[in-house]
Length: 178
Image (cartoon, rainbow, N blue to C red; front, side, top):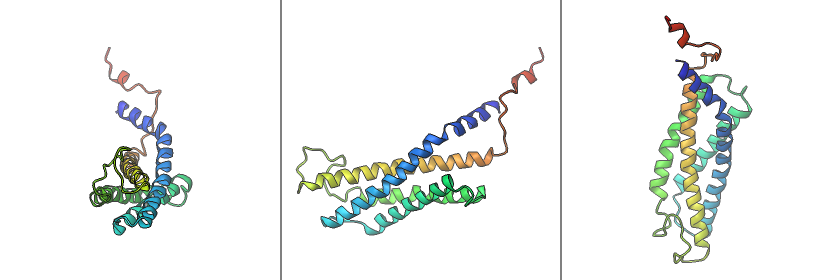
């Protein structure tokens, strides 16, 4: 039990940098997605509008959820309600990226995923568009993984919310008969 409490304390102590990274992700992702939509529309490239806008909505929903959790703790004082929203978000972040990946992975045809410079692009701007798509795709999956970690963290927090770590108590010394 002591090791579990130390593990929990380590998670809490190291959580802030992860939250900052997640905030940066959820500010960058909508910018990339919006840029992708605009460029695809401008160059008349095939675009799955339904999944693109669904993904954009999910990013904005997550950004609002993170912002309200970090900066407005009093907005949702009920931990169970916050965990409910995180659970919904995590489920959506499993389903939507999978659908998004299936629908959009080949939306630029035969162009390699990592947009090599030696590939013969139909027009010069297409490599930049490909790089935006690739960056968006990679960050989407990083964001998806970070939301899953947040969900797991919220579940751990819920389980151990009443557990107080007391580093002064040595649990093993209580069991010694020597």
